[in-house]
Each structure stands twice: as C-alpha cells, then as structure tokens.
Length: 122
Image 1 (cartoon, one colour):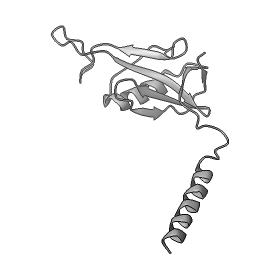
Image 2 (cartoon, one colour; image 1 turned 30 degrees about the vertical axis):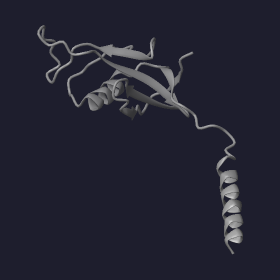
Image 3 (spheres, rainbow, N blue to C red; image 1 turned 90 degrees about the vertical axis):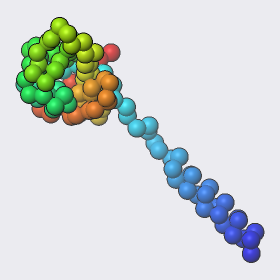
Image 4 (tube, rainbow, N blue to C red; image 1 turned 135 degrees about the vertical axis):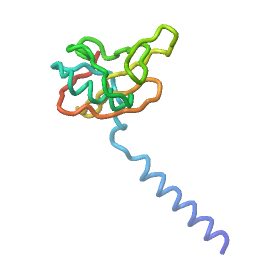
C-alpha cells in the first residue's frame, strides 16, 4: 500500500512539473524605452503620483532622448534647500508588450503611462 501511494505521488509530481515547464515563450521583461512623441502632461502626472507630490514639472522632451530622468533635491514643496541634501530621484521609462511604464529606480514603484507610444531604447 505504501509503495502504491509513493508511486502515485511520484507520477503526480512528474505530471505537474511537465505542465509547468511547457511555457512556449518566456515572460517578457520590462525594457528601457523612449517616447515616440513628447507628452509632458502624462509624464508629469505619473511622476507626481509616484512621488506623492503635485508640482513637479518636467521638460517638454522628457523621455524622448534618454530613458532615464534624474530629479535632484525634491521636497514636499518642490523647493531646493541648501541645507537639505536628499539623494536624487531617478525614473526610467520602460516598455513591456507595447505598454509604457515609468518606474522609480530606488523603490521600483511602477505605474503605466497611458496615452503614449514608446519603443525599446536600443
């Protein structure tokens, strides 16, 4: 009886592992991207949400030339104070399955960037 239970357990494990390993393609990973056309308002909205702030405004061409943007010394009022030495915040424009995302480099917090088109930054 114990042998039958053991053999049945082995057969079940083999069956389950076979099902798990039959993925046709690996899961796509996030890749660095560039915007095809500038969309400052959409980018500002996402970065403000990720930073839990309201007044961050970036250049018109953000993420059209480089897939990483660095913001230095931000605080609650978006004012740079000389006595406050916060490390810079970096954000990456990423793409996965034709969807664009902005990711905060340090926290890895990621949010979809809607209403834009982007391509892989090669």
